Amino acid sequence: MTRPTAYVHHEVYEGRGFSRLRDPWRRYALARETLAELGFFPDYLRTYRQEPAGDDDLLLVHDQAYIDFVKRMDEAGSGYLDYGDTPAYRGVLRRARLAVGGTLLAARLVANGSVQHAFNPGGGLHHARRDRAGGFCVFNDVAVAVRVLQKEYGVRRIAILDCDGHHGDGTESVFYDEPALTVSLHRYDGRFYPRSGTLEETGRGAGEGYNLNLPLPKAAGDGAFFVALGEAALPRLQAFHPELLFVQAGADGHHGDTLVRLGLSLAAYARLGDAVHSLAHELCAGRLVLVAGGGYKPESVARCWAVFLAAIAGAPPAALGRMRQWREEDQSPSATPEALAQVRGEVAYLRERGALTEPTDGR
Ligand SMILES: [Zn+2]
Ligand SMILES: [Zn+2]
Image (cartoon, rainbow, N blue to C red; front, side, top):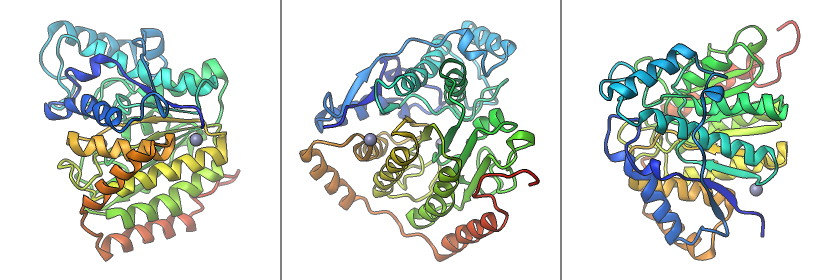
């Protein structure tokens, strides 16, 4: 059997989180209970506990002034870190440091060869920018981990595939001017949070051609999602040929999630797991760092993470039977022909512009 996948967990995850919504905080405990019941630990998933990230790590991405602001808001113990989404409270700073520390641990375990795949369910805070919080995100854990891998391990070609239902605007902004490949699939209609993530955001300067957005309509469904993934995101990642791949899985695209409503089925998360797992083995010796991101209905989050991880870490045979049953119960609405046509049009447009291949001089 292959080595277990690392599963990063800290008890702080089971307390108050970063969202103003209360229910999602429960998802970490529920997911662990579900995975434990299915027999994933310790042969398929092995638990690791992280340390909080220090200022030195955070400063690789964030401003000192912003870090100081979060410290002051933590001490004040009330209010918001942004305009009403991301609450401040006593302990939010430590919680935010641990979220980053979790992705740092996952990234280091993969980079130093301790494991091939590692998952931090508390990571994926992709709306956080250099100087501000946003959308339930305080510090950008994936961006900090990329910086640490560049600095400590000399990893040069890093790709981030973001399949959360929202655009990874914070992550995009951090790497916009450099040739780190950022790919985001998300709901977009010009109004939906964070109101960015168009086809035209392609990167700038040395980063031109290294940012790829795949906007999806509401209720896109598995059909449209996998056209975007299979015909645009994966070919672009193959052309880039990363040394290490970050994947933000997200669970908020599931049809049961009330915040995004991308209309994805449970089976889509299994298929996504398969796709990124194969890709990591094909391109970068399996080096795969996974974070969760959104997901606001704990019951569907636990199931999405379980089927996603089963595709990557493997699963006990009894668990496979249970998960097959879940997929049969999971009635997702089918995608509209309009959604499919929109995404096919986007792929054709990107192909025509050469956006799915590596930039060459003169483009
Ligand atoms: Zn593997
Ligand atoms: Zn999201």
